[in-house]
Length: 395
Image (tube, rainbow, N blue to C red; front, side, top):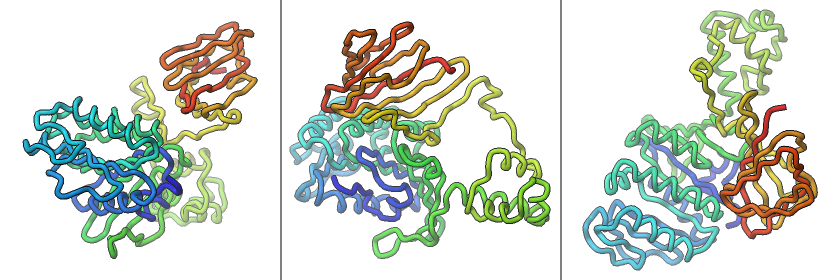
């Protein structure tokens, strides 16, 4: 698909564009126009790619539109046989339903657009764990197949732990809440985008069958500036006085409060001290663990065809990198310049490595442990990207 889109320009801009392989989770409350967003997604995709609709809540009526394949799971809920070729039996298990979905995916090929019925209905039909199993199965597969997918989710119908798990797996989560006729859209997950996309918010209304912004998007930096300004005003402090105590100019503080620029780490700590905002070790650190959220990561091009992101770094546990190798790409030097033990585990695809003058082929699930030997070359002989975890001690 060219110029990937969610079908709603406002959302495309909010998340800084839709990427190939994105699973878009629109997580809404009762006021969220999930049906409208689904319709717009299908309408935008139909002229450019095969569309697959996974239907469950109600029996499908009529013939699907041209270019649309309906995976009809509704018999499992209604008890009535499907009239569509890609339907399941009324007594079908989730595993059998997933098998039909996989067969359709293979038939339509990569680069398709998928729309899934509400996950609440999946839970209703096949049990509490079924919705997560469906997502764990379909989301990574469609990402690898470079297909788009839309998942409308009713937030109130799911446990917070379930929603958090979705955010850890998928590429994009947009939370949509409403009050009266107004809506608020907030980006909760945006893998592969700049870190400041997460937390970006925009107020909107539905107008003429579309979402229209009431005000421009508010970046995380702008929201932070608002918090600082509101806290300063609540204490009755003038801008000049706070700037003097922090050690910056009033002009610099004004720019921070307006979201024109972000404060440095040192400046932010001094601001919290001056404004009386608690700042210290997180509860995770006190509990003896930390969580490295993927929303703050940046992808780094190590070499041509070799892209990596640091998943975690710890003085004792070492560094963990997720490495993606483009199809057909190769290099004549190591991905990381190391004189330490390194472990490369293939999560997906195939990778050829040259180590100590020998050529070794690593398949999915294989792991290379190099202590004294040095990796001096690599190549992806496959037609699909290869994905690895590369770990080594911190310097």
